[in-house]
Every structure is written in C-alpha cells, then in structure tokens.
Length: 119
Image (cartoon, rainbow, N blue to C red; front, side, top):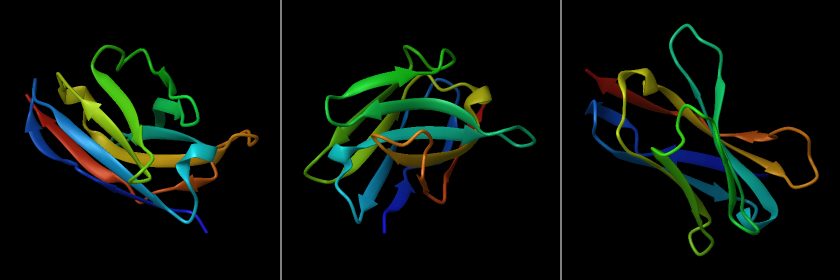
C-alpha cells in the first residue's frame, strides 16, 4: 500500500516562496514517477510538475517554469516542490501523486495541502 502525505502549504504574499513536501510510505520512490497537481476553487485539477525519480528528469507546466522546482530525496523517500515568486493565481490545493514507471496514469494520491497567495 502506497501512502502519500503532503505538507508545507500556507498563506503567503505574492512574491514569496514556499516548499511543499510529499513523503511516501510503502514503496521506494526510485521506482516511480512523482507529480504535483493543483486544483483552484471552481476549477479542474491541473498538472504542475512531475519527475522520473530514477534519473531526476522533470517536466513542468508552462505556467510554473522558471518559478517552481521539483526535487527528490531518496534517503527520506520524499519529493519536494520549491515554489518561488508565487502569484495569486497559484492559489490552490496542491496534491502529490505517484505512478509506477509502466503505468499510464497516476495511481496514488495524497490528501492535498492548501496554498493561498494574497496580492
């Protein structure tokens, strides 16, 4: 059973930074793609970034390129999302997700952590 637990959300002003964490239990992240998604109020959930943990290759949504950075720590079995230069439009619930390398979709999801960016 794979379990994901996000943390690090909060309320910040525009221009500030936050770092989200996603700690995985039940499996080692080295065999997974890990991703961050977000869902703003009244909107569909959208892809933010993913990383192939085996080699660290990331993929970013255009809206966050140059501002957000994903990383992983094998020792802690944790994935991080460093968010810089936050904008009010980044306000959302951020979800961590995992999928096996051979899977076509993300199989496992965390409960989400709230990020609110005030103008």
